[in-house]
Length: 87
Image (tube, rainbow, N blue to C red; front, side, top):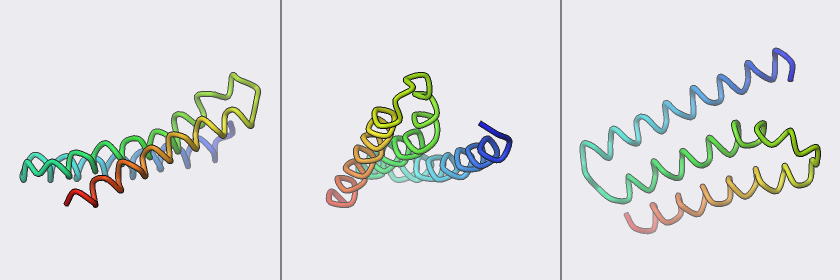
């Protein structure tokens, strides 16, 4: 990874976890269960897009790495769909 990739990943994490922070803050304020699902969905999406994608570099298998990262994103979107559906 070069400096630009690391910088983009860090910015992505910061912005993503700001979103997670505000969703968690909204849940604590309202105690509305679908908000907790939003927190979980956003967290899985952010982790899938950044940390998980880079963490599996040791596999040396781009296809498997992409499948794992995309699976995290799909799970995150499913959780978000459940949150919206329950609200």
